[in-house]
Image (cartoon, rainbow, N blue to C red):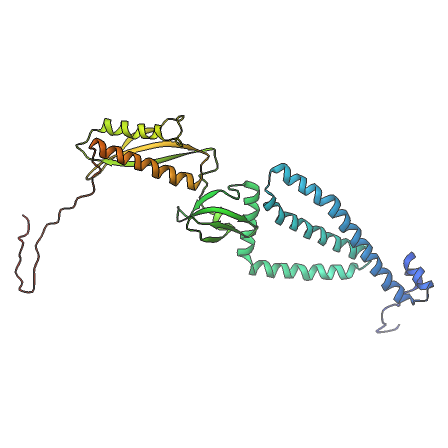
Length: 307
């Protein structure tokens, strides 16, 4: 019995049609086998790649078009599809070329590497998954005005990728927001519907006529061209403050945007304030009464404390 025998040399019987042709051309069995494997690998990879590019990608594109995904949002998903087609073509090409053992080894290395990378990139993966949910759930679109973190941040969406969303604030600052920050908490999209209700509290004095003030608030809302007549504006007494009575005006605007919201509310509040001044209706400011005395270095008080 022989000990330590080396690998069995490749025989011509082990070659395929391509290898036999190469062997007949003068190559050794080992050279013909290696060349045949390389040719089979290239043929398999190219065939699967062409099939995926001309069959799978158009199907994915049509499916995204039916779901109404924006063109900008489709690009990263198409890139992921191309990556998947390339990986599948690579795996099939290895098997078609007869590199099975090599493929198994590479799969083991890739699995270990993927585990290590996954542990080191948990935040990136979390943002990636959040980006997928943004694409599928569509809580907002490019061009929408959104608010999050209890209104701390707000702006217009300029770009949505699978890791971050870029938002332009109303001070023209660009915020790069991790996608998980927009999916893990409450997010407000005021412009998702075709109309938006606004509220503003007008404070009038306790001695002023509430009915007259209410009529003025409603009248100015009905006069403004950008405030809707249906639903009609309304006013509710909502506050009894220390120095004023709070009348909350509620009105609706169409096709809302941040610019329309700020402009419309500003014009409306200005018109109501002008009418209040003309009608003699007061908008009081808080009054504070301070009691006590003032003392200087002599230790003498110049104002006696109130009883």
